[in-house]
Structure formats: structure tokens, C-alpha cells
Length: 190
Image (cartoon, rainbow, N blue to C red; front, side, top):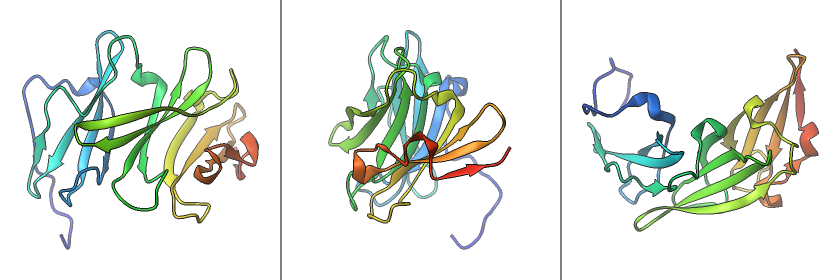
């Protein structure tokens, strides 16, 4: 619209446990022309499902508990993941969901989820750090085309022990290897 208005309820349901929602992101994942809200939802047994809510323009339609993606049991701990939305492997078309995930072997892995006809399709291990090289618990991520190649890159702000931070760019045109290594593009003072 042309202005912000007071918040209004677009969807609600008894039994939807919001403390299980670990990431809420939005993007153009469908062909409807309206954005979709994705919610990474943690089930018992380390199972993640990505629920989707499609906008009608005046409300949200819940896609159901089966979700747009189901990791299966003992596969995904949402406390070890950071999500963002962008176009990482293409310059147009629907958005993609990216997740940096801290594996039990202390590697950080980049996962990409692409919209498909029956939900999101996972591309696993798009990029992985060496063991113990990256502590995802110290990072916040976002997406932007900072390299100018018309594809989004992952941008991380990585907190250091002294209170300073590094700005790191996982370059999509370079197989997501960090530009300038883990030293990053910039350092923010403590």
C-alpha cells in the first residue's frame, strides 16, 4: 500500500507452537506474484519442516503441517542454522532459501533450497568449511549482491572474542568460498 497501518491478524490457529519456529523469512517462491512466508519449524527428534504461508493480499493461507520441505528425523537441529533468502545461483526467477548449518563435525555447510512443483528441493553441501574453521554461533547472515554479478552472495557479520566483528562475503560466483578468506572484507571495531 501507500502507508503503514496498525498491525492486524492475518492468520491464527490453536496448536501452532510458535516457540518451535526458529526462522521466519519471506520471498517470492511461488508463481502467484505474491510473497510467501516460510517458517523453519523444529519437531521432536531433530526433524525440521519448512511451513509456508501464502499471501492472499489480506491474509495468509497455511500450506499445512507437512510443509514445503521435511528433513526427516535425526537430520536437522534448527539451533545450528542461519537462514536467508535471495537468488544465489541465478539472476532471475523465484527466490531461493539458503541455510548455513553447523554440522556435528564442526564444519559449516551451505545448503540451498529451490522451489519445485511439490515443495522445496534441497541441494546439500553447496559449500563447506574445513572442520573447526567457522563457528556459526558467532555469525549473523544476510543476502545481497555485493560483488555486482547479479546474483546474491551470503554476507556474514562474524563476532570476535574482543567485541570486534568481521564482515565476510561468501561469493556466489566463486562457489561460495569466502572472498578474502575468513579475514573478510571489513573489520568493525569493538
